[in-house]
Image 1 (cartoon, one colour):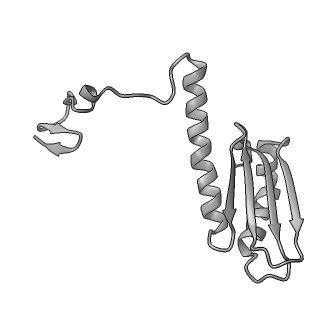
Image 2 (cartoon, helix red, strand yellow):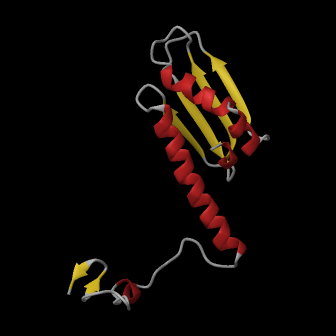
Image 3 (cartoon, rainbow, N blue to C red):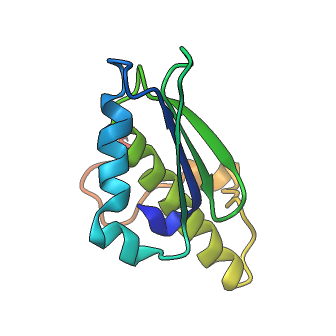
Length: 128
């Protein structure tokens, strides 16, 4: 998960009962496997003393920053969102490295082509 990130900032008040997602996410970030995937990723923990809700801010390697409300989003959901976006970043980079344009634009006529080798007559999963 950390391989897609350049920075993680976790903010919470230790006395706030809503910190479960922050604590779990912090544990995931501190796991050996996560740290080895990107030793250069900055991990910042800000312990708050006010009533500010717990939040997790991540900065992707391309500079895009996302803020997650850790009171209403589980650590696992945040992790999955990071992995999904990271896969998209890897795909985008792969296309760019090979001189292809991004995003991929599929011409309208290709969207309606029949697929050879399929049983029956189907266009994108719909019976013809």
